[in-house]
Amino acid sequence: MTQPSFDFSSEPDQEAFDTALLQSAMTLAARDGWSRLSLVEAAREAGLPVDAVRARFPFRHSVLFHLGRIADDSALRDDGMGSSVRERLFDMLMRRLDVFQQYREGVRAALHALPFDLPLAALLAGTTMNALRWLAEAAGLDLDGPAGLLRLHALAALWAGTLRAWEKDESDDLAATMSALDRGLDRAERLGMLKPSRADHPTASAPLPDLAMK
Image (cartoon, rainbow, N blue to C red; front, side, top):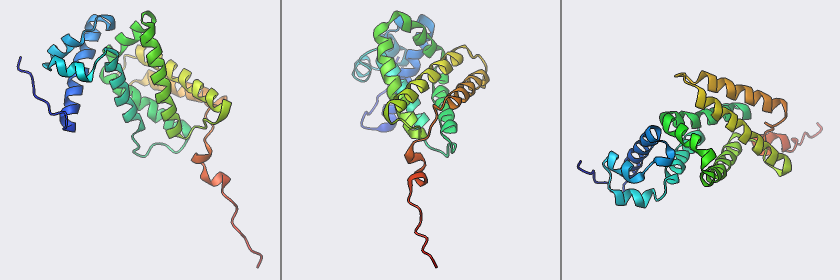
């Protein structure tokens, strides 16, 4: 197989390289299981130079981190999301899952490996919490103080439950996943876990206008 040439100073070339490796790696993970994934084999299957893959994806976990970054970028892309914290979180979390859906069987293979790969589980837990903090702040969720930390952990639990529903959802439109996310957001709302931040309501703390007596 002739290996394609990539110019890594060119953003389109870099993106095409990463996409080819990601697709190849997740296809192999779906076929053989995450623990047996070889990035050398993924490089060869994609027709990519092994040394270049080693430079950009030094560890197997790098594939998942790259996929997570793509999902986060999609989730944070603002194209007129809903006006409430609840609506924004729904849109963002579903955007994240829409990216995962493109590599569904590979992601499921990685999820199935987590109980047997504690270092991977710990790494993903940390990156997921960081991603959820970004999403929460972008959605306008109040994260100030101990109560804010509690809201962030509630969001993490909501995401975990939604991810489990997605893993089992075989429908094309992800109706069961959306239903699970809706129910989770309803529950969070009832428990006061979707409180908007002050920045999300700038008029709430604005001074009253000076109404001079006439």
